[in-house]
Amino acid sequence: MQQPQLLDEEAAFEAAGSADVLILACGAIAREVLAVVALNGWQHVTVRCLPGKLHQTPQLIADAVDAKLQELKGSYERVFVAYADCGTAGALDRVLEHHGVERLAGAHCYGFFAGNEAFEKMHDEEPGTYYLTDFLARHFDALVIRGMKLDRHPELMTDIFGNYRRLVYLSQRDSPELLERAREAAATLGLAFEHRPTGYGELQPALERFVSRLDLTTASPTSTGADRT
Amino acid sequence: MSDDQLDLSALTDDELVAQMHDDLYDGLADEIVIGTNLLLERGWGPEKVLSDALVEGMRIVGVDFRDGILFVPEVLLAANSMKAGMAILRPLLAETGAQRIGKIVIGTVKGDIHDIGKNLVAMMLEGAGFEVIDLGINNPVESYLAALEEHQPDILGMSALLTTTMPYMKVVIDTMVEKGIRDDYIVLVGGAPLNEEFGKAVGADAYCRDAAVASETAQALVLARRAAAAAS
Image 1 (cartoon, helix red, strand yellow):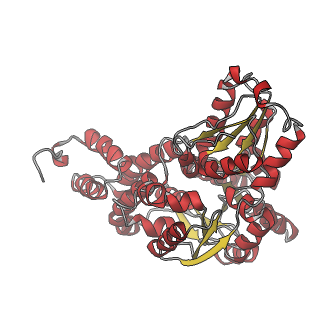
Image 2 (cartoon, chains in turn cyan, brown):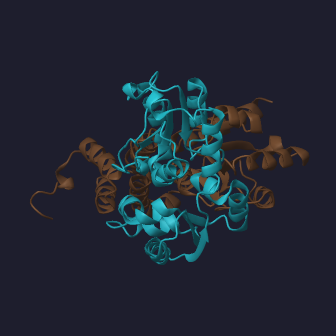
Image 3 (cartoon, chains in turn red, green):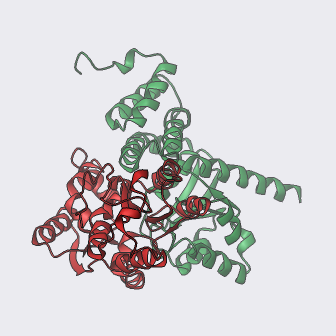
């Protein structure tokens, strides 16, 4: 199959495929969603992403998803939203209920990567835990240091991170480079470092359940309404 | 001062206060210190400087934070600027012996270490004339109860940022009910994932959607309670 292309992780992109099934994903898990699509050879599944930087401003997520679903209304037979609650405090669920669309279970991407149960345990063990995924390790400087203005105002470090005690890197892929970046991030924030490889965690089975329920996986790639893209 | 910088001393009082609102919004602590001192030199009382220049400026910041116009770094810079102004005013306010409006015990609930919003509320309440007992973060019910007993406040304020930790507010309120002390206090709750409905469901007196609302609500409920007590 044609390999999905990552066009712009921080803006929006569209994976290869035709237009029967849409996965509208957070850009912060774009690579992982595309990897699951590729692993399963889903040519009838289109992936679109919202900017990954929304991860840092959860209050903007529900409106952004709503606007995108509105824009794409009628273009796909089925839609799945690859977001957890992601700090929207139920606002995303209200949007999805309106559109009749389901999402990933759990509170955060950390939860579905680590496993929601394991994540809760980790949080109970140390509430002052700051989490990084591959995306956040890769973009730590842009999203956290520059995004939180710590480069220009290092005095905010204590205000923002003073209550954290450790950084846990939940890695999706085995990447020495990202591992090193995560370790450096912990050092920058003055936190103890832990690495917990998670792979795609509950993301992969959740997407597979969604697509398999559609009973479309055996459909011909040429019969999936590509003219609607 | 460079040529392109505004000379705050050349502004009228109204212009200076408006400029201080802008400077708070932009997180310019040095300018807030200059503005605060200028107003005091011009004979303003510390209470008026606090309410008109600082609290009103932070009210605007808090509303824009709630509405997604400002984000955490900008709010922290603004809050730090307000702190710089309050550091000048606090001893002066203590000297004047101004009557406190009331007392509040405030803290983030168990399992939650987020305190930016809570700190903002504490600052606004202090600015409004409350004595604030800040319990910090990750508070189990026992900490709240001990603080209520020790400080005998008018208000208990609880904050949470996580959907997973906000239900703990109900644990605290239910425990207060069990101990027969719930009605002795006004209970206010707040935090990004909360809403009005949640506040009612857990048995709080009010949900406060931002720091300015928390301050207004605290003042209104304390005055109402006192009026009711006086009438009975």
